[in-house]
Image (tube, rainbow over all chains, first blue to last red):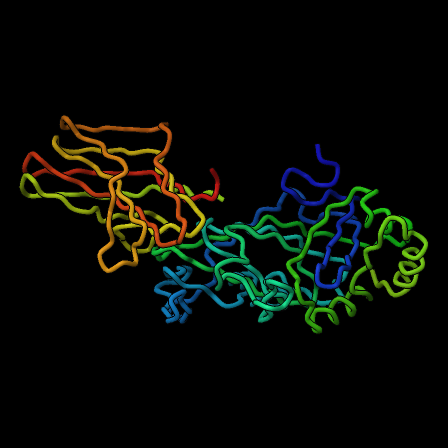
Length: 262
Length: 132
């Protein structure tokens, strides 16, 4: 049995979660105090929220219209999309157009979301924040993603949704079929805290202490996303040090911990 | 990544010697289609074939390397013949595999008929996958 993850791939209560941001070579470290939706992690969301008549670009350079709600036309791809709240939920969530969006005062809450897309051959990537594609080749020379030949996943994506940031999911269909889509989420609604011990953070970040590492698809940290992290958590990540740099790291982490809000 | 889908088609030729392509349907596709274009780097694996109908039909599995060509060249990669009226189920065999190297590859189902008017029902399980 995995000590850190359960059978769904979600972090167990009491274990550590590391959200690594490649663009800054920094990581946010959380201890999962509890899982508020334990035993209720599956959310069969339904079709991708595509509306009939929406114009989508195609891989051949033209455009095509969505023929029916939830259908991704052949040879087309979407722009960044959020998952809208179902009618019954709309009046209760922070943003009816984005079920994973929460505000910064909910900083002790974190969504760990595993998104399964049917059919699973559909391309998927994510913009963080929405409108800001993250796929890059040769640093920043070339933007990649569902609209290119590579730089995307198929059928599955795993993310942590930070408060105060809208994420934009993009989907692509490079077959000749107009496909009916379906999305299933397996998510953890975590109550989190930052470990306030610099030694422990160092041990986690040099991988001496078990933790679940999730590398976020962030190649460029947008200033709005960075300020959202700082407003929410008081910092935008602990720097990763070599295991031989313990003293330097501890001094740095102690400085950072003075700003931590959760 | 694996997506297994069952496609279904019916052919009803009116005379012997007729051949053609199946018009196919599957629950995930909104409309009918005659071929499946395989995304680049993925494979189409045909795991099972179920046929029912009149004797004399042959089901052909065909692929092309470039479905975008004005007149694609379709090559037969597998065939099943209905020697007698009834049904034929071919499952749990090693799959017929078509690999997409360019993204222009496609597979389709066709038929030939040697015994006059009749009907053939064909149901085929196709998996689109990146796995070997």
